[in-house]
Image (cartoon, rainbow, N blue to C red; front, side, top):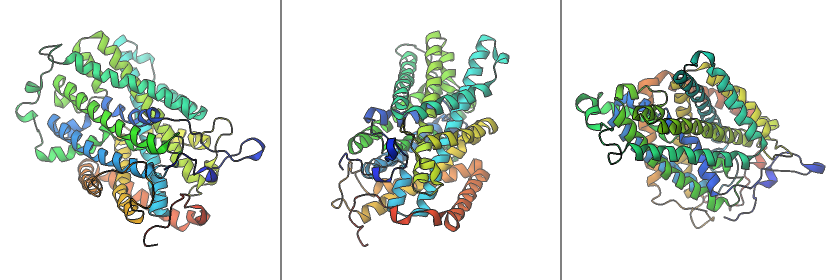
Length: 475
């Protein structure tokens, strides 16, 4: 895989004197890491703990590790395919080249809705955190959390509008701070530093170990995905990194390793400080853990860490959702108006602006657990596509037919493992949110029918395959 811009001929947007312009290749591996970890790290600060409510603390830990296996498979598969299909849109563009238009359209919608609803969940958390801090200082009644929800989304959309390098550099700094905050909490609550503070034995003894039995472990997989949901967003940077073959695999695989460490440390500290009944419904569990330590320093650090994690995640979500929407517009899967690139900032500015009111609608109208569930379901549908995509990719273009930036090992074991874990997670979601699961699948079926019978006529079929590859085997 060379570093040449193989997609520039398909980019929309007009520059000086009518020249075609595209997205800027300005990002490095650290920015890819910041994009992936930045989106996901908020899952350690809030949301993962709902898995405790589903099955208890032990069930949440098991779900954490099984979800870690699922996302490791996602990271390996994405690293191989995206370092080869180096174009905006990520899994959408992969589906377009490897499977076909209808699958690509659906995968594009999965991405946009997963990231937009995750962005909404982050904004809700920002509002909740502001209210918590205001309550600690006795000023809760004077603040309206809706105003902070709107402010967070609008500010980050403006930042994304202005340029990707500044956007992801901002994410890199605040994501690193949020990760270090988790490490500090772990170190300062460890038995060697604070003897007797963590009470795992007492809090998880007897019926508290697995309050709902083994079915609770399966149910916990629903919110277990929240530990890592969004790491696949690194693929959306494919068209804006300087060296896709190097930066994408390195940033993605380093990101999933970072997140598995952060998730395990988060569980360890929170499960040792809070009973599972409270932990399973807490709004900001890491911030609550810091307060329970009695350390003002940790309260301040974890409060800032929670704020930074939510902002980094929302920032990355705006970046990823807009790139998927932009790529679909550029390919005429959606109105071509969305495929424009800003002539100065070189960002998909129309896609960024269009998705702002949608994120606000979710954030202001739905409860947090439902927003998280809708985001998980959209992501889960995307993960189900990935094993099929990977198997077809290897079958159509074997290893010796095209150059890859990364070749993931043990194929097809990761694809089979990913598919099996997705099946378990569907069942887990159905146990608690069956109605939402059916409603979302029905929505995507209706959207597919709309695309097949109406929108596909506007697609330029001759311009769909843009990669310089040989014909697929068996063509």
